[in-house]
Length: 289
Image (cartoon, rainbow, N blue to C red; front, side, top):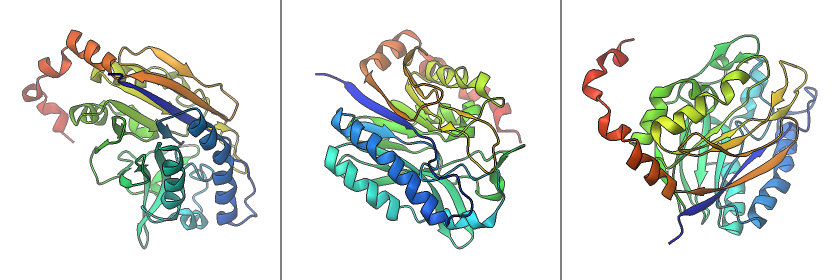
C-alpha cells in the first residue's frame, strides 16, 4: 500500500500595498491572489496544502497601527468557511494561517486546519512572539499561543504546525514529534538580512532530530509602506534525512509540490533511535526560566 502524500506550499506576493485602502479590501485582494494557486494545487492532486503566515493580507507587524486589528476574525470563521469549499471541491486538506480574534481585544497568530471533506479540525496558535526590530513588532498584535502543540490526524497524514518565529525553538519542534507528527508545516514571513542564513539550517535540523518531514513557507516581494526588506520566498520541503526534495524561487509567487513518502520516516527512525534513546529525566535544566 502506498504511503505517498502529495503536498503543496503556496508563496505569494501581497497584491495591494496601499495603506489608503480599507483593510477589508486589502485582505480580499490577497485572498483572491491565492485562488489560482489553490486551484492549481487541486488540479495537480495535492492532498495537503499549506498557505503562508497571515496569508490574506500583508505582514502588517512593522506598523504598530491599531487599524490592523480590524484584520482579525474568528477561527473557525468566514475565511475558514470559504476555504472549506475548496477543501471539499478537491478533497484536499488545507492549512489556513490567519489573524485570529479570540474575544474583544485578544488576538492570536493562528493556523486553522481544514480536512479533505471540508471539516474544521482545529487550530494552532503561534507560541513564540517576537519583538525584533526593525519591523517585527508582533507583541503589539498577538498574544502567545495557549493551545500547546496539537497534532491533526487528517485524511492523509498526521500533521503539526509551527509558525515563523517558532522555528527558532527546538523544544516545540520536539513536542510535535513526540505528539506524533509525520509532517510539520511552518508558514512564515521573513526578509533578507535578518534570518535568511538560518532558513535552510534550522528546519532541516528539526526534520533530522525528530524524524519527520518539514514544509517551510515564506512569502515573496516587498510590502509598502513599511519596506522592511524583501521577502525571499524559497519555500521548500525537506525529508526526515534533512534532504531538500522541492524548493521554490526567491522572487516569484508560486506553488511548490512534492511527494512525501511516509515510509521514509520508518526507515530513518529505525536507524536513528532518537525517541528510544532520549533522556527526559536528564533535562531538568530545560524547565528553568
